[in-house]
Image (cartoon, rainbow, N blue to C red):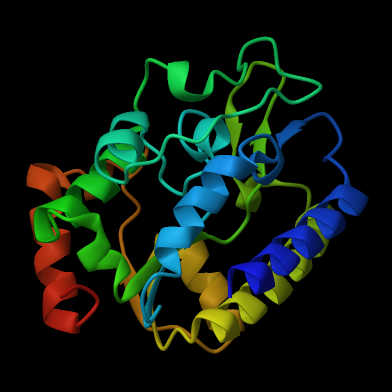
Length: 236
């Protein structure tokens, strides 16, 4: 199955390379410079049934952009997920957002909240990956000239449309490969993309600190979110 995933990722990267970067923005693709960590992570996602898929939006500048792991808070990627593969430097780096990989000192808040919630329910990560996987809809991170994160929804319309077509095709094939039957959209954008494929199921608030209305729901290792997911069958 991993060879099939490798072919999917290579096809995705080829499509994204042909697409290029949006005008005026800087683009990182961690499936290239952090591919070794991503592959290490995906081996765990493919260790079980893949029945449940958690889907996020795209990499944050301090998480997946650095480490190649969806919701990739450094401390949890290392200590909870047990990842350690090396990260490479891309040929061109934003002067205000270099790729530091495992040397980054800042934990991505979204990742820390998300994986802490998973760890609270599954102290052993393999118990979670026995039935679930975690993916991002779009693997690209977009930064403006000041190094600020730009979400896919904020991209120019024609570019966003082409990007979403590529990522929707990849997601559809990935769902089939994993055999996913239940879906948890992490945030509204992921929910919209799953709905385009007819897979709208559960939605939880995005753990980003920019989503201030969700702060209470993600407090205490995401206790409120975890309770909802257990009730709805998204967590065991």
